[in-house]
Image (tube, rainbow, N blue to C red; front, side, top):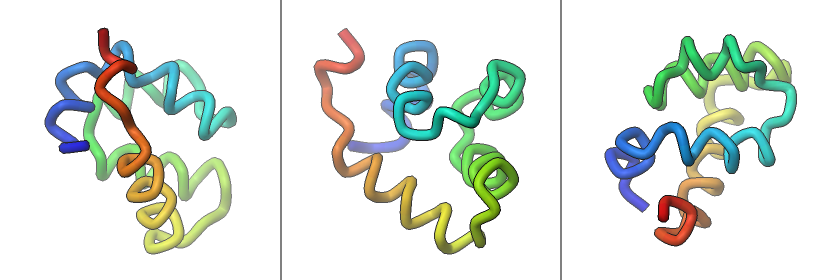
Length: 71
């Protein structure tokens, strides 16, 4: 799925992202605001991952994102 779709549907995406990365807080989501680079940074911070490791997780999650999550 294209990240622009995820960003445009951020409110709906937050629930699915929280399922994947439960350590992210509501304040984190407010900071992220749909921006992929911010999501990467918060995942690094909360999970102690490198930038590349966080990016790999985001890529995998994004590939599994489905249109029906946003309806």
